[in-house]
Image (cartoon, rainbow, N blue to C red; front, side):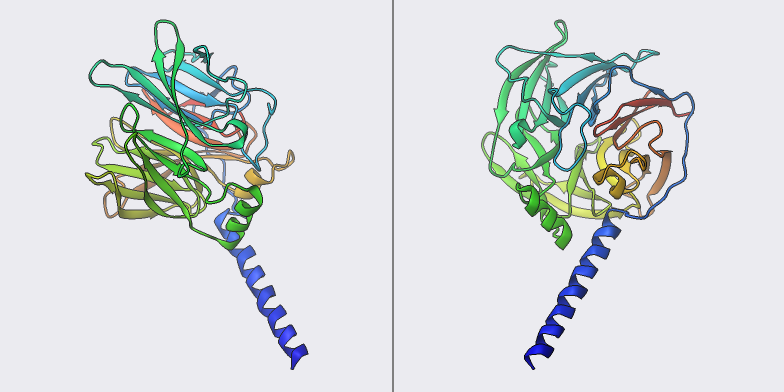
Length: 356
């Protein structure tokens, strides 16, 4: 009886492990292949060599770009170099990124920028830049004021909180207020891998203000990109490993009420809302295996997806651009401005193309 019990238990454990492996393979699109889809007149942004993880655009066409992310488990092409924030003028025919200076006192040596978000104060038009930072593998949110005349980011505040333990992206809703995604429940790398293997949907969205900090949404495999609708009534959250866009309605107390979930075929990263149409754009990863297990002979590709009418019963999902990694690897964001598409990456280059 004892031997039979051991064999039975071994079989159950083996079946469980096999099921988890298959499930994880499904979630990371282990075997997905996509055909290339080109756009006219694509060019790489000069000077961007170690990532362009997130891009945020001001109404006048000036944009900020975060570069140099060092993320556990992913390759970095400049592991010893601090991160940077680049300024882009998207109105230029040939866009030329320029690295922004920081005010004195800010620790540039450990700067490791991830998601970013801008906020314009309606009272005096002050531009604030919120940056998710990972100094020494921790998570903080840095708030800067942008001095346009001097082209400098003036550091105002570093935010740390126990609920902001693994921040990925951020959307600012006030001079010191924001929603942020935590892409992992655990901070330890090994436990993160265990959570992925077990398929735990424990990641969340947190609301922060100087007076209160609270979890406002949860139940995602890997909460990633976050942004807000044009009318500021809704918050959109990408669940990378769930391959979904989660739509939430903002409440008066800042809590988020689930509205709908849109399933896609790709691993979504950051989200961008076109300020004119309300369409959602995302830079995504066609095949997570190639992203997480980097191989110079089997490069991670890039995919850009556009979602129209997400609040309707039948949203329109369009695959706009696909590259197999020969030009641009590991796309993490896609933003549009004046008929052009700008594609950022986790650790590679940045690209811009004409949409027509």
